[in-house]
Length: 168
Image (tube, rainbow, N blue to C red; front, side, top):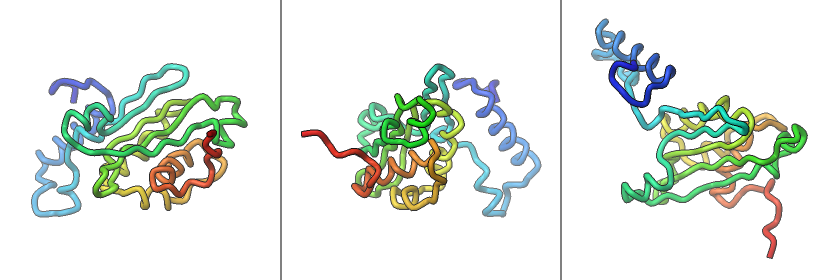
């Protein structure tokens, strides 16, 4: 938990406590499913509880560059989201970062209302090794803010039909 240092987030501390308890109880020995209960700092979501909220998980574009990781992004602006427009809060966006070679998700961020409620899906996708097609083909209910995650993956793949035409 927090005793091991930064970042000092309650959700990180609880997860580390679960891992420690399972290791101490011997539950990780010889069982592949239980062995997946591990601590991976890449998937600790962070949220700034501002208005609008800002949430992120995984590597950022700057971190990827510093690590020599070639990434490309999929971006879905909330001014193209029916739900965000209906809520009168279309100032946000959802951004996903994918490894250029494998198309596996390595990071993502959301700016907008309820960003903190949605960032967990991106953390799960990173943890599961999902690629852009996996995320884009996940069925999200419409109209919701959460569907912006799938639409950002579709934008990365060049398959998003919900984006307005580019002005020339």
